[in-house]
Image 1 (cartoon, rainbow, N blue to C red):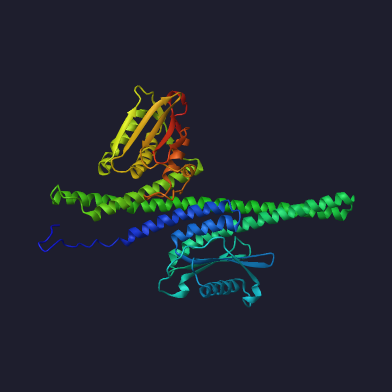
Image 2 (cartoon, rainbow, N blue to C red):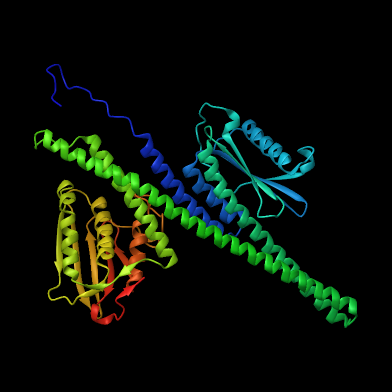
Length: 479
């Protein structure tokens, strides 16, 4: 666009594509559902498992409050998680809505007959501005029930805006897994209590020296109840495993469905960019809107790949196809792929490859993925004019790769968390999901190597990882 004589013209950016935003939301919710189901699979308590799960849920669904009601042994309790700065009048309305909904679900004559005790949640939800809309449509109430068992609770969520069917489906998937986790925890506690009671009854019978038929029958009855409860607990565990498999099937299907439109978006923007280059003068850049769409679509495709990779790593099913490779060639290929980035950020990038390196046995694409992740992170933390070095050298029966930068370095307290999934330092100044280093660690582990970092505050950081030499590894492929 040329500027008119009266001054520069103002050009409005095209509105964001709502379908693309919907795809990104679907991906985020799938990712968060996966993390929540992991917490519920090893459920410990409401405070230790549901509190962090609620924090993850709030990232996908803006919440103003959450209420969990549970009934056990004839007693009911209500745990309330308000948002920050929520006034007491609004909180009373939230509790009243939860009580009325639960009374309806269990068929109680009044909310007073429920005898609900109140308990605050461990953490506050982040503050959310309330938008206009139907007040009643802000609430989702899901009963907690497993299989043919009786209802034992309910989960109420209050949104900052009106909630729709997609929100209901998302919350229902979480509530179903929560119900299984809570029922499994209840069964386990009943199991422990009854087993202790049975052991105590046996001990008392032995102490008294009572060998009467009645005492024997009581003890045997207690054992029978324990065995029946153990079978019930095993069935609940089986249901939890089925839920995990279903989650992974959903992950595969949704990831596949997300890939198709994303591939179309990427191909279309590539075609638009080529058309623009042909129709316009070569020296004019590709329109910014097309570049933004390309970058966003490519980033989402990487996020999907990262999620699938991490699931494979957690299950121990990461595909590794090992073949002899030239370690120096991998370093040089990585360096070449970052030439444009180095120019844009005015960085100096060099490679130091030990001569006559023996070949390594590795999955070429996976090791390039590790190197690209480490170099990509280095470009984000290194200031203009800085230097990044890629090294590889042989050491005993392995090759040692290194990516060194002269950025700000890493705090000692942060180093121990660097390879944790979703962890990001509070000082991080660039965007990211916190999965890259965790995936890199999983790939290196799958090759039989190890990865670590050395850093001194203010003096840059060096990430190193090892890969076994070809002559020292007998396996040529792992599934």
